[in-house]
Image 1 (cartoon, rainbow, N blue to C red):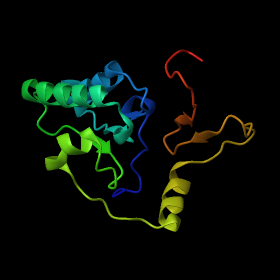
Image 2 (tube, one colour):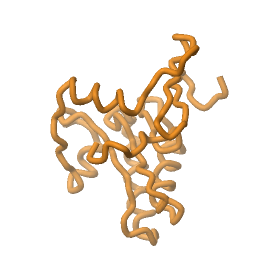
Image 3 (cartoon, rainbow, N blue to C red):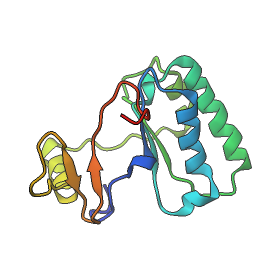
Image 4 (cartoon, rainbow, N blue to C red):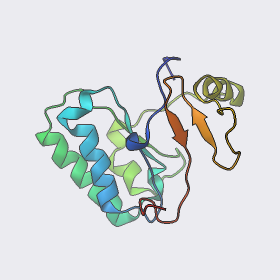
Length: 151
């Protein structure tokens, strides 16, 4: 949000968490964030991490701190996004020392920011919900009960 020209995250940078998210998915995004290849300016995100099951949350903590100790990346970019009111989440407790409060933006500011980054291409069917980024990438929002199953 600090740079108006920076691109939005790509599909490999964001994991939208659900209570059905698996340990492997969480481990993969942590590995991407802390690997030496992560110095390509990507920002890896866990979105809605409070929804992770307790077992997966424990594994997230374990993988993160284990990989952090062996990582050679001093300035990794890994963000865990949680609702501030989710006090019963293990993730919030485990990563409490890293907690940062972000400013609250108005709906108008958010809409203005997104309108500069997302444009519906001409001739696109409304069902596809494809958006064109300024960097000529296409983003598609696909919701599935079993993500990654090729459907």
